[in-house]
Length: 422
Image (cartoon, rainbow, N blue to C red; front, side):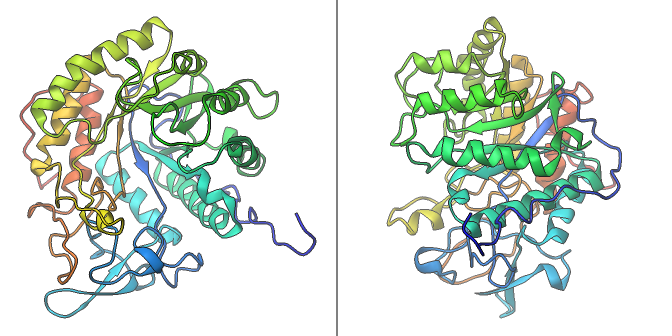
């Protein structure tokens, strides 16, 4: 670090407040976890990133130029959590958005998890964001916010590195060095809210073995896994790999390379990415029979564990426009929760002992399960709604799916009817 240059990791500080008991952190078995992107930022939130993950080219976020397909419900938010936008509601009032850079908002998100029985999150940590001090600062503040909120609400959390966008050589230059900082400064082994499994901290690595134009290699991924497993100081972790949906057959979205299987056997938990791989309750059930069941047999025979991914629906109309493409709003329909519930039941019947819901806060691709409004802004950009359902509907359904996973609720195909007096 050059003389006079500020340390971009200065905001990475361990939580020192009171931990409130809740979800125990010793195992992933019986847990339903959500992905938490935490990547949004807003003008005026202090991060210096502008409208990150809200905006289109040129950092523009205005009617006709945006990347989100759901609008967050901020009706419960205080004034200091809301950031003014150029968007307007039908009555002419200003529409606001949130930022996870604001610790009060992350605390609110984890309060929602506690109220609806969601166990916790895998906090995404994007390697590409760690190239510059501004990105590091934003990710570190969000990480500290998540750690504090998990402790205060009795939830659990773990880091998941997303390798997307990294160039060849950057896994060692960025991710390995970053994990050393995390271990040195956050004291995760002593954090009662940090997820452990098999007596080791869990760390996720997402983006291994995809057959697209990624620049990093399988050899680099292998080096990262070996480091996380075996390094004398920074290893001894339970490693979770986010892999392509068709990793076992090495086709479609996966690299056609047997080395992927050898690499995977060095990890502990395999989590295939299923977003967009099916689009209806029936096709989700078929996927569970034809893909999930044999996947689980393979992992079991190789002494690995299996974390299936389910999602509530999919939509990226506004995001696609910023790339001069076209996509239908609500491309994979939610069906008022039936799509999500069908996947959860199918995974349970296939023998899953843990489930990952993508995502808690992903409004870019319309997979969010947190509170979103049925009355979004109007104008040049169109937005999905929750089909008139209460804004906490998917939080409630996700929490119930966790109960179903643990055998506390029947694994029946018909979606349960909400009890609003709960």
